[in-house]
Image (cartoon, rainbow, N blue to C red; front, top):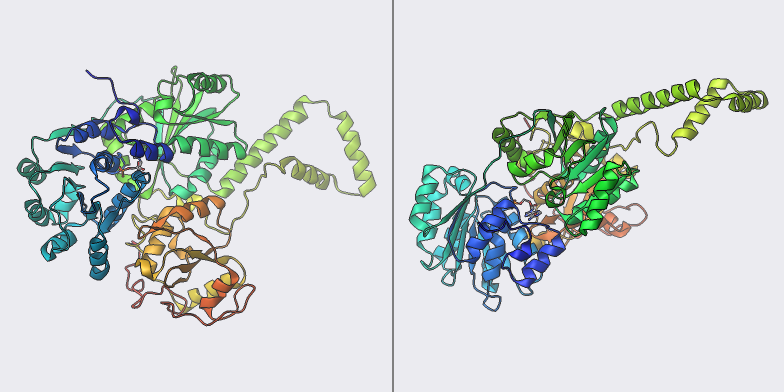
Length: 606
Ligand code: AMP
């Protein structure tokens, strides 16, 4: 048996790909990647049973990129995906993994996008095309997509394509491709129809299935929290604060970069936290574990590999900040708590799109994972007050306070102030660094956003479920919010020339930053940029997330609009400047500025 693959540089990938992975911060190949990449690099076909979230995109994208000849501009890799969202996501992944391959082009093509634009883009050439079956078929028929030089075909989420009725289109495409090619088929499940396709069109494929471990430890209480990425840090600190039996935690994230970033953020919030990742020397890692043991540290933010085998009995909590790739990783992670016969807690953060992974873990471990109800701001305040009272009671009991009694008596006499007012002033001073009340942000409490019902509050895709809106009252209320500074106008670098629609923009903002659509105000589209009204007190984290978020492959690069920009499309003075008349934006009074404004016709959320 060969040794397990633990690092990407054990795979025979080209240096620019390894450099991109190092920059992204992936530490170790996920199981599906370790299993597939060597076969694909060796030229075999693959039949892979894997879901989204397992890292399957990189499992096929990395070896596919490895074979691409940049000097040729014809499509060499074709990926078929069931939905436009997946096609875009996969294209973006290719782009990231190829960031050190200058001149590389990937093109997503899907129905609903303008044919003219697609034809132009196809003419310019692309090394990788990622498309939905119908549109790919269209282009093959029109001869606008020449696949003569194709060397790799990937069928992604094949069972979804079957479920959505695309299987005939997929077969038609398969019959129009060069016979000399490599084919990889990925599917979350393997119904007979998919096996038949695999049997017919794959050549002696290597079958890859990630086995599910089943044993978990019954002394571990397992809970999950449905939460969008942007709120995870707040949710984590709130959990750490209110868990009764908290002593120490290991927090799991996916990348080395994330271990460093999250540990720094926790430190900044006053926690004794440190990171643990594969970039650290063995000596440093051992020191971190030692510090966790001797209580110098309470929280260690780790990747799977770095935390393997940690045995520190005081770890009361394992937090899966990023969901693990598979059940096996989950079982390993949560096994870091509940050690030496103690009770342990495992908490899993599940982003709206990851619900299927939660169900998969439950199925494989044959244990239900309970819903965690995030405590409200008020509950946190109650908890802090109770702890404060307890501290005061202990001091009253154990300390000799006579000197302080005299000081207070002096103050009472001098200021003619009631004793409880002096006590309140002292309480205020005592809690100043760590206020007893949670600050009012004007935004909904994350306890409400982190609803227990998967996908009820945070729709799978905000584009699919939006409440009807735009009645006059709402418009006026938003105007007022804007005037009073609760809403601000931000600029983003996508506009009409990128084929962006307000729907896309709302979808990206809601999904990436977890901002509910009712907090997203007017959007105005211009040629090469747009503006959007959002709460004026967006946190730095949220702004960073929205800088990087993409619509139609374009990074939003979100920033506050200048007063001129803000005023311009309102056609009236903005905060601090006079506005020029709008330069023909797509705009509807107070609303989403799509001609035909299709949000109105959306069904309300269930
Ligand atoms: P996928 O299953 O392809 O949709 O990937 C799920 C997520 O895992 C994506 O956000 C990837 O960026 C991330 N990911 C994939 N491979 C790795 C890896 N080896 N290390 C860390 N994160 C990864």
